[in-house]
Image (cartoon, rainbow, N blue to C red; front, top):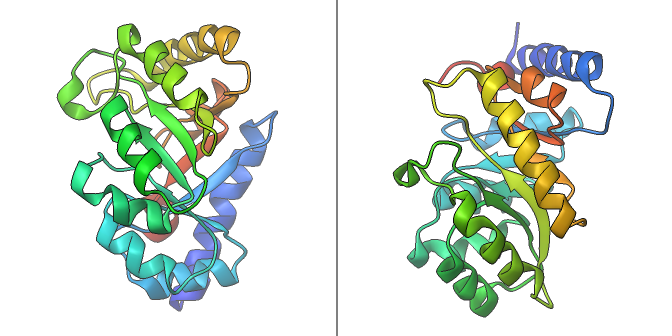
Length: 214
């Protein structure tokens, strides 16, 4: 089996699993981190248009060669934002208003912004606590350029995914009472995307189930 056949088979399996569990529209983001640009090119040939990267350097390189909507989902570093916003159309991991101030200054085009939520308060892993979430959302929503898309979270490894995504769904439903336009929910990766979708995820970030183990 050649690489295109392998990726095609994996992609169809993921798409069929999404179709089985979803009762709403779901955006499948193929996470190509650590894989060569040739894999992203094959996935584009197979109809994938949403690609995810955790590292600025990889995203910049691959997005220059493969058309599509490129999503940045790694932890944000201030000094990388000028570059990140030059190639990404969607940022999934905003958790600090200071980073948004930089985005407002340096981004060359409009961005869709997800706010990353911490489900356990361990902020070193990334994510705003509930006490900071609403003030951050208010800052983003005031922007004349960028759009508050919704929330993103990665449940802690020790947390049961079903419990984590159920908790996130409650947070998101409450959040939409004040920010009704922020309807998107970015949650779920290769090991748990079906569970995330069952709790309302609209965007899933899938790498190894499509591309194989790293």
